[in-house]
Length: 345
Image 1 (spheres, rainbow, N blue to C red):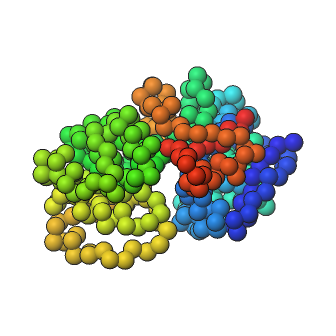
Image 2 (cartoon, rainbow, N blue to C red):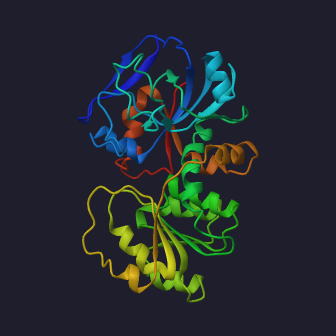
Image 3 (cartoon, one colour):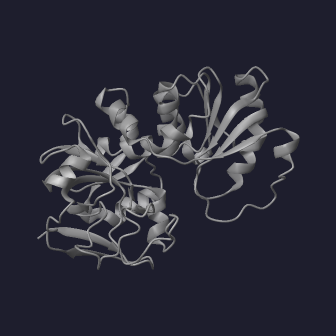
């Protein structure tokens, strides 16, 4: 019997046996192979879904999904450009007929149709308004799940022009993907900044394209960024750190006058102590970290331009979800991972 993990919204979950979804007109049925665990999944588990709608509960989570098309209707085949047997990555959001968006793994309740609209399951439905892109067959699905963070991060770093300097605050899976995307897009000096507990991630940042890695608890980041940029400071600072909002203040300390700050990391509380006068007085531009370029991300992976082994991190079978979540939430004493995923099939 197919399985699906269900989040109840109160830090409880269930592994349920569920029927395989029936193929509906305009839709496809995906056999899930692997799904990444994002920090937003951790927040969702705790009852706070960081999506525009606020999410729904109970629901099948998971939005970093790799799988194979098991069944597809003629209309869906025409819309998505794929056929049965194709391995694909799934865009995290659906564009509905009325112009709104719904996010897989967050916005679909379990009592809608099959209820299987997230990647923490053996099967899921893909509905009209989705986008899927083909992925290569010669790599493990857990490695391929990095397409999702890359599809976002590639848009985050586009304010940095070729040859400019970029600071990435937060060397998690989104930050590391941003470094890969920035290097591919011709950004000049790339500097990763993290905490002492991020040592594994900072070392990985150097391997995937960063020129410098700064432990801001052990070094003065202002001094180090000044040294790396010839005293100019960063043209663009990407704040992709999740959780504590203090990184946003650090971003303004590291950006040059006339530079840009991109706010992308989801924070768990409001920000106190920020001097907003810096923005007009230093002529700074603040941009949202938003957008998805699924085609770019999947093309890079398919062309072998992404160090998927370095970005993949650790993987666990679906039934070891609690262990995987604890590692993703950095609650495992003495152990860290640049990323965590679930191997479903």
